[in-house]
Length: 190
Image (cartoon, rainbow, N blue to C red):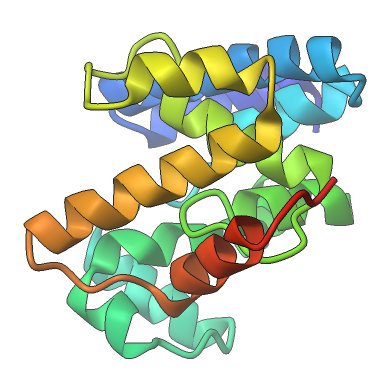
């Protein structure tokens, strides 16, 4: 599917604020790709598709997860905002024509991360956090600075901020987030 078709379909399927966020992620991801030597077009497309499942109500997301054979973890049930990232690769493929495995991986792990992330995975994860429309949260300006100077430190900082936020709200932390934190805390992973 052409980018303009994807944009048009997303603008009809997402709330206006979510669509604005999506464009912010796509443009931030493409800027990061330029700076870090990644594929700019893939970064832009992955940024557009990262929240493609977010427009569905939670009940619909749960039904779609069941249809696609996605096992709902305890954390997904307790924090249903995690569902859209597990569902996104399937929606990106079936509704937006994405057949690119790298893009599918990036949209799948954009919320929780995963150990051994590719450069594109990291870019989408980070761009989702730092895009210009994000409300100011503790550590955001540091994450924005690190995104262009030390991507792995940036990733670790975002994960630590997220875990701290979830703990302060007494919310479940997805095991993939903990695994990602441990993996990147252990040292330099390029």
